Length: 272
Image 1 (cartoon, rainbow, N blue to C red):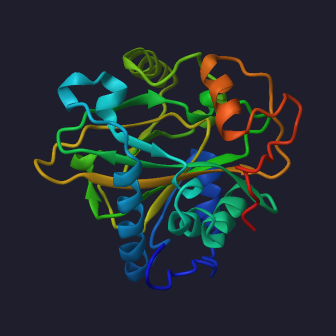
Image 2: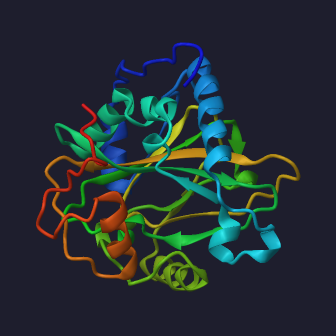
Image 3: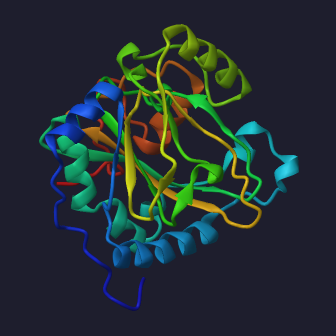
């Protein structure tokens, strides 16, 4: 644990009606300054230290497939690190998630550090909720850079409005998902949205069904450091897994609870 008291992140950040409306219409929204400079500085150290400790990917970029080249992915750090737990379970984040979804409370699905190394590859178009055996569309992912980033470092990119179509196709993150979803996006004429830059502590928020991707990191020497948290509305239930990824998620993030059960295992605590 940290030698010094960590920022509690218990104060709320009020959202504007425009931000909430934009999220629900477009399927994503950028909310600036979710964390203050001093807060993100402290938690960057906390998360990066934990990510380094629990990272298991040792292969060179050249030895990995498209998914592996996209980022280093270290999941559910809150479960194994008390300081990351303070971050992931922060009421400030939970309240934003609840306000965007229009619900009273949310639960954690899981967190994950996504570190895109210098020269790291693109992240193919995909839908997060393809992986989740849940009966609700009220799901949202917070995507927060821990350093200032630009487009060239792998900025998250959205197909605006795509969440209204729900499930599109049975595709995991892959070269196939990139080509097929790119074709779908063009057919539906979804506008593509990507910020030119984000400050450390800013955050984008997107629905589980919002199609999104990211370019590679062309920086010669800077890793794109991002922390994400997936929130689900309290009251969601587990559905029968429809693919091997949902089966794995049910076992890992929902502790193997049966279909029909509330998505409220010991790994899915209420935030508010």
